[in-house]
Image (cartoon, rainbow, N blue to C red):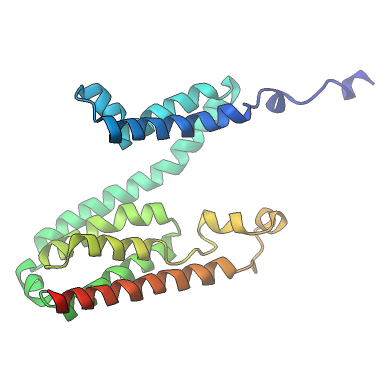
Length: 229
């Protein structure tokens, strides 16, 4: 029967080779390294070698490397994934602006002016971010949405902004739960495909321990820096 021996399906035939799959990543790295080492004076090249420009250029390159029959599906998938993220970021930025006008910033500046209050603020930043992460599931959405909301509180305090950023980062990655798409990468293929209700929670436990350990070290550093300062 000739119909059974026509060769591989079109998707497998048109699949890009390994070098084409790695080309976007290599291009992204080359553009970023160029911008870091060269710092071009021409505005167009400066934008192209910045993180935003490099990502945009890499996205365009990836689009044209895809087979034509897969480009529409790729764009649709990108829109479905980014639209909720943009909505969350926009809403968080609006809420942060409202909080900046509504909160008594002068009182907060006095309340978080000492070393121990800095430690309390670090714990608050971590807890709020971790709660949002566990409810939302996406670390990227958490890291993009929470800072605009917490920015008025951080700005009102005398806490170092780098320490605040570390606290928010630790909260963004504190727990890899089943509502996180990364969680299912760690599961056996049959469990991920079935989406079973009792998956292996090892990665969840380890990620929680990792986040709490980072919080302990960050808090210790805040206390030591406060005493030395």
